Every structure is written in C-alpha cells, then in structure tokens.
Amino acid sequence: MSVAMIRKSLMVSALALFAACNAHAEIKVATVDFNRLMSESNQAKSASQVLQDEFAPRQRDLQQKQKDLQSKQERLQRDGAVMAEKDRTALEKDLTKGQRELQSDGEAFQEEVNTRRNEELNKLQGFLVTEIQTFAKTGGYDLVIPTSVAVYAKESLDVTQQVLAYLATRPASVPAAPKPAAPAAAKPAAPAKPSK
Image (cartoon, rainbow, N blue to C red; front, side, top):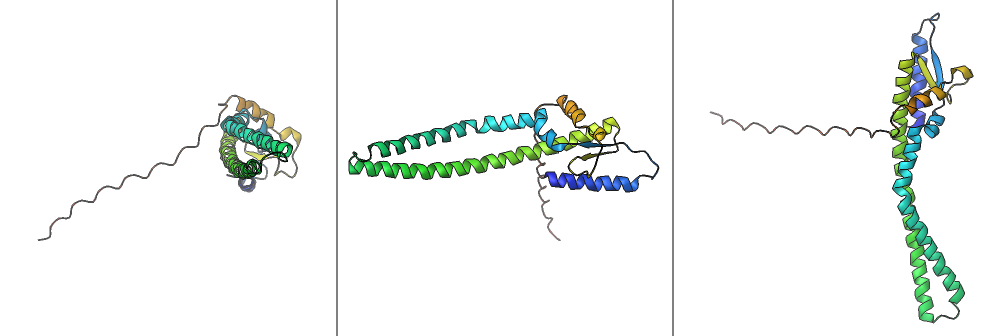
C-alpha cells in the first residue's frame, strides 16, 4: 500500500466521518506526521538495519571489484608503454570484461536493493497504519489524519510524538506479513456408479 493510497484512504475516511457526525457533536481529531514515523520509529530503524545487514556483504564485494579494476587501470597506464603487446592486450581485455561485469553486477545489485527496500517500506507502512489505528482507538480519537494531507491543523492536534512513544513500546522489528493461505486441496470425485 503506497503512501498516496494511505493518504487517499484516510481523506475519504475523514470526509465520511465528518459527513456522518452531527453538526453539534464534539469529535476528537489528531494529525500525525507519517514521514517522521517512517524515519524515526524504532521499527523504521530496524527495517533499515535489516536491509543494511542483508546487502552489506555484496556491497563490499562490489567495492572490492571496483578497487581491483582501478588497480588494473593504474597498472595499464603506468606500465602499458613498456609491456609486451600480448600482455597489454590481455590486460586491456581483462579490464574491459571486468568493467562490463562490474556494471552488470552493480545494476543487478541496485535493482535488488530497490525491490527489497520497497518490500520493507510497504511492510512498515502497513504496520504503522495498524498501530496508528490502535493508538487512535485506545486514545479515543474519532479521526487521525496525516499532516501532509491537512491543509491546516493546529500544532496542538499533532500526536506524532505520542505515537512515536507508543511505537517504542511495540516490537522493534516489523512482523512479516502473513502469507496467503494455500487453497484447500480438491476432494477426489466419487467413483461413478454404473447405470442399470
């Protein structure tokens, strides 16, 4: 669920709530800075650390490959004029091949990092929405909207710090999203009865 979808959903909910409320009814409203929650909550920091731990070894490997190529390039520049033609050509081919491989590996790495980051962000967003809903119900709020969609809101309505404090009492790592249940196995058909 994207942030834009969350915002739209919250705005529709807000409008429906306002329409349903009596003109004289008192409602408890709050705003929350979702971007702050996405960056400052323990769960966000944990998700970031998970990604760092997952990709650090490959990143170091790519950096080492880049250093090796740089070393070969420096050797070619330094010694290329005095190297045997065969050795220089082999080094040039090796360097070109290594640069292509590094570029390909780097692109694949970046794509995988982006995919995993999006997975973790989606998981974190879903978790935060659920936790904000729980916070709102527990606190007796009728409506909590992101500050980014509010045209105007008094600072006193901002409960971001309270939500961060609430999130600090929750598990630091975001639980994995439940996997969809496997479809039930079809029952075998009953054997056909012979007709008489």
